[in-house]
Amino acid sequence: MKADAGLKISQFVPRYTSYPTAPHFTGAIDGGVYEQWLQDLDPAKPLSLYLHVPFCQKMCWYCGCHTKIVARYDPVARYAKALRAEIGLLADRLPGKFQISHVHWGGGTPTMLSSGDFTEIMALIDKRFVFTRDAEKAIEIDPRAVNVKKISALAAAGINRASLGVQDFSLKVQEAINRVQSFELTKEVTENLRAAGIEKINFDLMYGLPRQTEADVLRTVDLSHKLLPDRIALFGYAHVPWMKTHMKLIRDEDLPDSGMRVSQAELAAERLQELGYCQIGLDHFAKANDTLSLALENGALNRNFQGYTTDTADALLGVGASSIGRLPMGYVQNTVPLQGYETAVLAGQFPISKGIAVSMDDRLRGQVIERLMCDLKVDLEASARQFGADSSYFSTELAELKPYENEGLVTFQEGLLTITPKGRILVRAVCAVFDSYLKQGLARHSKAV
Ligand SMILES: C[S@@+](CC[C@H](N)C(=O)[O-])C[C@H]1O[C@@H](n2cnc3c(N)ncnc32)[C@H](O)[C@@H]1O
Ligand code: SF4
Image (tube, rainbow, N blue to C red; front, side, top):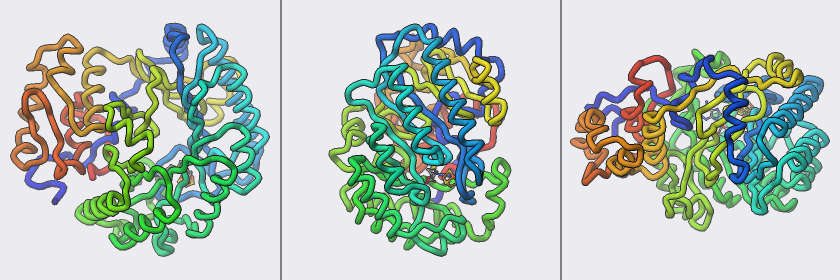
């Protein structure tokens, strides 16, 4: 299928890990507003934490994350101190000792922290909060940046899920993205994690990379399957060189075109399903008995900044430079520059640079978009009713979706909007129809497929 099969599909749309999306956050939300929002949280309800570590050893040219390359430990040690200060600040200002149901360490490369700093921070969280009995404690791992000693420290600190960055196993692709990582290394790290008791393993793979072919993507899927990860994320490379200048090192002529991207994504999805993985939303795959697959079956799948999740916490608090928090009242984002972040938290101030308070319309549209991203269907009339709106609330959007319906990409019956298997790859474009901020045309995003 062509991405633009006779439809007016915007080529650039968000990934909808939140609604409203981050480009629409403003400076109207500051540390004072955040403090009030924290005060209004219910101590009876568990929280989730996201901790960001914005350091790596070497830049991967496709990288879209907030990170910087460091050669020495000093800046990392200063940052670890700031993380501890921010955790203390949160615990001091929250109205009670809260339970934590999910912790996610992301980056950058969280294992750039020394084992000592990592262990100390996990112990501090344990002291100032209470982990629920079955709390998920997850970390993103660059297999090139861990060893057996570090892995045992992670396990001893309670980590029970690891996401390994893999991307593609072909050397020519690895060279074109400045990330050479052998299958043997990925295998060894996977085995070492399991031996240390970190049994829940995710792999991150990518399609749409420079010099990558359909055969490379399929070979990467097959090799990954040999290592039996519980979950596989298959991300489409978001090429945004106007935002990340190192992406200019990737030559335009090496990039697969939209048609090739679609067939890489579709072939990989087919192969993963043949291998027994369930397809979850836009870009995740999980074994049939995995909690993510069970959540999908039960209509309990959610989406947050880390992608698809079983996390049901009312609030996700972001810790670290650039981290985004989601609270019932709205979103907040910490400042990105390290110095500003560290100075603020060490002075006892929340380092919030922007955010957005959500209106009723935002909540309703956010729910519609989240259900479409997770379940590929949503009962529009029931959602409108739930938020006190009438059943014709989305009549403009439904009119806009007519061409999609004519092309067999969506169906609409008795209030239920469903994305068909043919339309799945355009789920973000369907969500964009419900995005009233995008219509104001302010931000530039990555390609829809
Ligand atoms: C923070 S990294 C994972 C941990 C570690 N830094 C690593 O690379 O192994 C998160 C994942 O985001 C994905 N990613 C990074 N840049 C991307 C981009 N521009 N488009 C799509 N996915 C991207 C990659 O699959 C990467 O593994
Ligand atoms: S993909 Fe991971 S290892 Fe590579 S630069 Fe980005 S955050 Fe660092």
